[in-house]
Image (tube, rainbow, N blue to C red; front, side):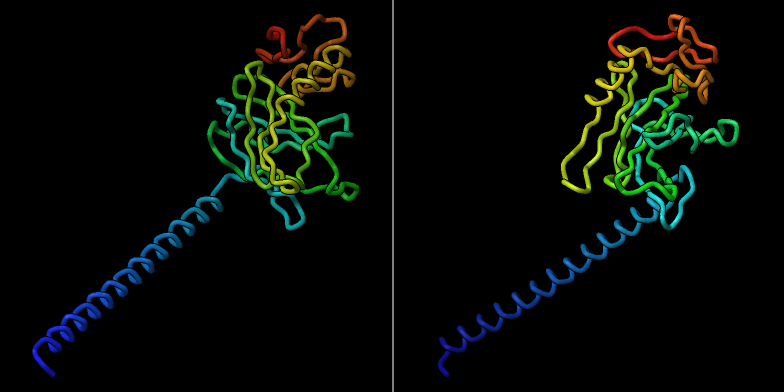
Length: 233
């Protein structure tokens, strides 16, 4: 082998060595990135498991990751089916108001359906804020939600934003809540304090709007909101 061929062979061997080292370095870098990603996912999973649980977690129940994006701490959430007249399930205020669902906080909202409830059953949520205002979210299909946000419109009406399991589309219920409130006001059934007007009893944190009281309250709320109008005081 002449000198020229020896030089070419040496250069090729050196190039192969460089490429081999480079490939090993890339593999090590990819492995390190994968380990970092696994660690980050494990940390995120651990954080998710540490979220406050509102309600009682059961094997057959719903478990929804809910974010309080209303800008105000929530001190009470009641749940009933859309067909029921009375609020039966309280997730907060069980210890004299010690539990608070803080703004921008995430939690697990858990609910176990009754024997007659199905995946098509819809639910109403009564939201009670730390400023004593109360609002309702209507016709929520728990079976179609894995995670979402409860938000608050300019007129204090709460609504949900979530991605539908069935369609993959983002659902924003603000327009539906506005329409429901306007229909209730027109029919004279808009509930102040969250209690059904027809029940004649106070809600979880205040009274219902009386039939002849013109917006007066029998409870101790400092305000409940009428969409498109003013505040009840």
